[in-house]
Length: 291
Image 1: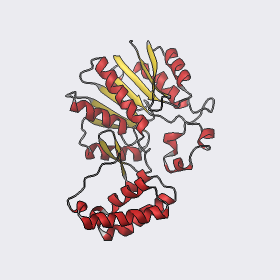
Image 2: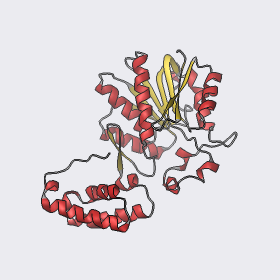
Image 3: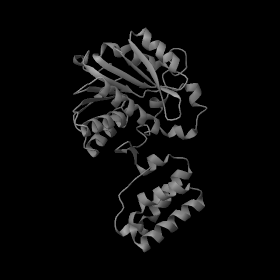
Image 4: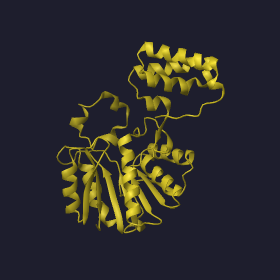
């Protein structure tokens, strides 16, 4: 659910009536009821009639298929309000579960000042949420937010500032390629939501995905063309970067769980399991040197 601050004026009968009228107009055009309310709240706060043009422009973009998140320009992810635009993936509820799993793993392993690497950080959602929630628990972590896209890193930096999350280093790198080698053997948590869709499968998915950065969704398919290449690469490279108590958590496709577990065993991990997403689908590989 979206929760934006509402001014006193926004609660007045005049404002309520104006917003209701605009919302009804959008619904008549074909915008879903909840989306119509969000658009009106975003672009005509306080029932400002001057904002009606912006409301109609936003509605037109939505009716043309553009994701609501990009139209609004920001979207909630756990406790954060993240700026999002077509340079980064839209944060999804399933990925919020990855953060919960990661927090549980850190607590179970008693890591007091974790060094965290967020590979393919995009908007910064996973890493920034982790650092923010750890800080709320009195745990001071250090985050390395890694992405090949300089555009994505611009968005992630802005989100760190916006959400008052410090102790973050931003690294432009293809996975581990340009990560500081001094971190080898010192990372307590590696998290990643890499591309895991094949080019073939992408063509069959909802066309709305075409608005999002292709490189963050579709894997390079260097081997079998099944979208597993980036997941496999991260699994294979991670052991040398982890601390003895370190954990790797990777979001993958729901049909890739068994293959991900095999790859983790082949990489020498002593503890390997799969966690479910909100829809009870095998979605997250969790592996570590030690059980």
